[in-house]
Amino acid sequence: MLKRGLLAIVFVFGLTALGVNANANEAKGVWLTESKKAHVEIYDCAPKLCGKIVWLKEPNDKDGNPKVDVNNSDASKRSEPLMGSNMISGMARASSDLWKDGEIYNAEDGKTYASKMELEDEKTLKVSGCVFVFCKAQTWKRVE
Image 1 (cartoon, rainbow, N blue to C red):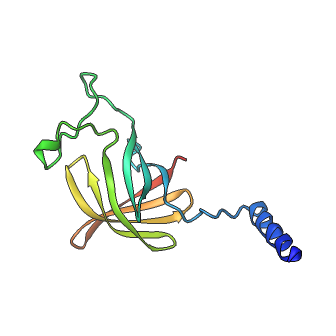
Image 2: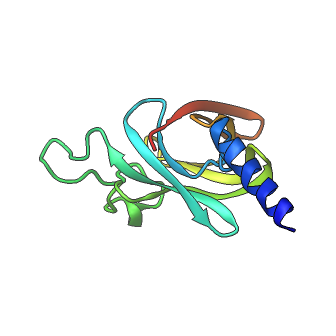
């Protein structure tokens, strides 16, 4: 029994020494968008993943007020701040590095698209938004 426990400890320390990260295939965290205009925090919204804007390169409009969602297709949401707004919803894990069946909101055109995310490596996330069979992908880089 003691021998098994010791082997388990050696195994865990061995993985750590080799740089193996138990969360290497995890999309949760803060990501810099391809345009470098925003950071999006991807977080658990059990049992799926969601994402919200946590940083904007230009958080204020020309008058110095916090930017709002002026292009939202829902007129009642056009006065809501972009900072903290939900951008990604309903991402379901499909494999160790793929999440799909979610939606992504594009504040630049005010539309929501079918979406998926694929972790290319622990620092690179490919995010796609699609209409029918036409998709546009972006590569996001991990901030933290």
